[in-house]
Amino acid sequence: MIIPAAALAEPAASLSGFTVGVTADRRRDELAHLLESRGARVVLAPALRIVPIADDAELRAATRACLDTPPDIVLVNTGIGMRGWLEAAEGWGLAEPLRAVLAQAYLVARGPKARAAVRAAGLHEQWSPEGESYEEVADHLRARGLDGLTVAMQLHGESQPEYTEALEQAGARVIEVPVYRWAAPTDPAPLHRLVDLITARLVDAVTFTAAPAVQALLRTAGPSSDAVLAALRGDVLAACVGPVTAAPLRRHDVPVVTPTRARLSSLVRTIADELPKRALSLEVAGHALILRGHAAIVDGELRPLAPAPMAVLRALAAVPGRVLSRAALLHALPRGADEHAVEMAVARLRAGLSVPGVVQTVVKRGYRLPV
Image (cartoon, rainbow, N blue to C red; front, top):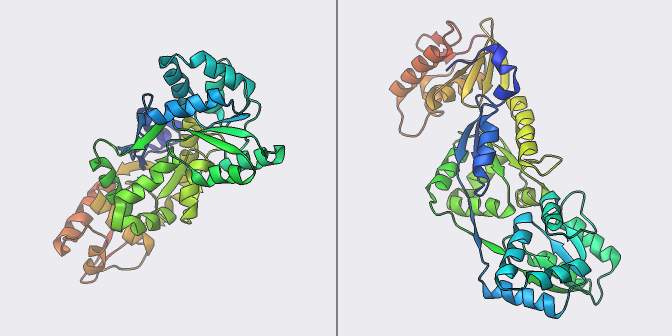
């Protein structure tokens, strides 16, 4: 389908031509809809799934510990965690005692969703970090003084010993409250496919809405994890909903974009601002040519291309005016292709662009983009 210049100027087409991988599970459909509403092609590949543990003895023991020794400080990390904790307590007949204990504590809500869940429970937070990071929380609590105090920390899917230890070293007693845990996706095939797409640079961006999803992706990649990280450091944009989610990628020296507010809609706007900046623009044979993900914009009209023709176009556009032989272009195609496949890809590229003269044959030498 060809998208004309007038449509490309609209927000609904701001991501047309780009492919975005989504690693979220619980809100994947919402995120996919937001991306698709801006024209993106979406690859759904949940990296993890949330498993509630309302019947877990560990959660019940942590809840009983909070009732027996009411915490001075309660750190609410996630909205779903806060709601799940109160729902589990309701099932045990402990909701009201727990709510009374929480009402007497210094409540810290790490982010807007946690804050909303606290208020929905009829409680009020005393403080929230501006950047939603654990480091801010730890610094704030240390500044207030923790010696001899009890801190109940609702976990974000898994134990985070570095933060527990930081609070304990400042003199606090920490009760970890595990409300849910992360598990591997029921069907791992989409995540394996996303790994292949990342390493082949066939997605333009990958979104992360939880820090454990980063490690899950790299575990799934296995021996290809270095190739995944290399792609994320260069051609594939890593987009995270907030700084906590971004932290594991930054530890691997991956540049990350995050919105100013940890909202899915803000994340999509950030991607829509960033990806078009990465598009390659050049003048070829009197025509304006922009390479955008899996499509080319020719004189303002977007023309989607199959992977092989797009790979040939990218190789030629990387060295405009220079002749590339069939053997050289063969390296841009998937493994197992031969020189005949190059000729077929060039033919399909010309047909897809529908503009004569953009891809020029140089007899007995190869092909080039005339500039």
